[in-house]
Length: 115
Length: 114
Image (tube, rainbow over all chains, first blue to last red; front, side, top):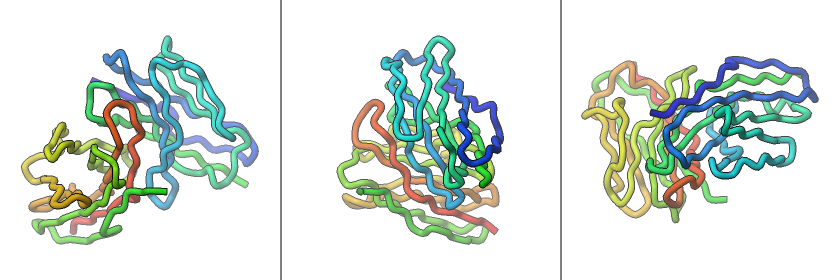
């Protein structure tokens, strides 16, 4: 069975602060995929990033960066210089190679960025 | 940019009524999904659909639920006899191929059962 845990229920920061969202996962698959999705107040789910289990290189994309560590089963997501528009619920999700794309989501972290 | 579209955006229905939620996945995608999110909770997998049949379903997806791809573009979720606990946001999603391709979600259909 797969499981995703986002221990941070809510985070509140002031604009321009950096913020890191934690994600820990469990899977028996040897090949799997990790995702971050953003859900703004309007409700839609917006894809942010994807990482394959066999590629632990961490990257930066604009203000977003992620830290994937297989040894600790963690896939943390950082927003640099946060903005008010970043306020949303952020979901970490996991998909195994053997499934047909079934995503297992974490509980989500509510991020509030204050001006 | 291609997107997944869902209708209706919001539907209110009486308990016991049948509801059909409609989705148009991204045109060259082959895998289709429905997910559900009860207010304030996480997103939960309902069903995946590939090659005109259900490939996987969760325990939530009981006999009250069915999916169909009636033509080459639409993908529907039917709830036969709605219950109060079916009130949720229902997301349609699609992806192109097997493995870890990104799954793209529609904007959701908010179902309220009264």
